[in-house]
Image (cartoon, rainbow, N blue to C red; front, top):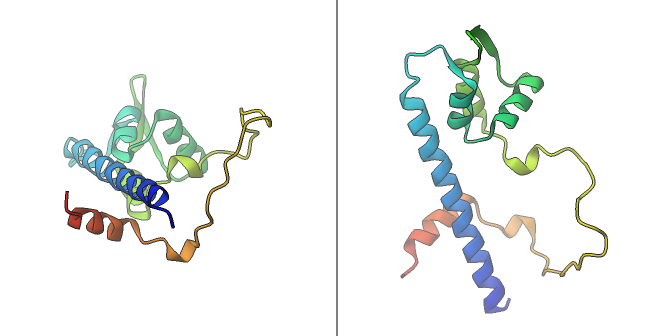
Amino acid sequence: MDDGYRGELVESAILQVLVEILRAVRALHAREGTQNALAVTLERASAMLGCKRSQVFKLLEQGRLERAPKVGRSAMITVASIEALLADGVPRKGNTRSSSRSRRTTATKVTPSAPVAPDSAPETRELGAAILKLPI
């Protein structure tokens, strides 16, 4: 394996770990204001889940989140359904796309990459621990 490719893998792993940490911190901040609440606004729900409003609507359509009665004009989501979804694991952006055609044309250049065995990829937490041990 060449050093440039290995460096790209390490950078990619670092970015993935940082994204996970950022999501966890945002979710913790969002939960602080909802400790005694039974329902939250759509905006608060998206902050708790670390996703966009459109993703919250998709989760409602799929039945993975439950609506609470509206308060005025605000759509409300039950905190219990958000916590249950967080316990199951929040879906990532890449998992929610429907199988639609790519916006790129077929004339775009595709660069081949070296095949990587799926079983050889370490878990994200192990990668995070390994990154923390790197001498920087």
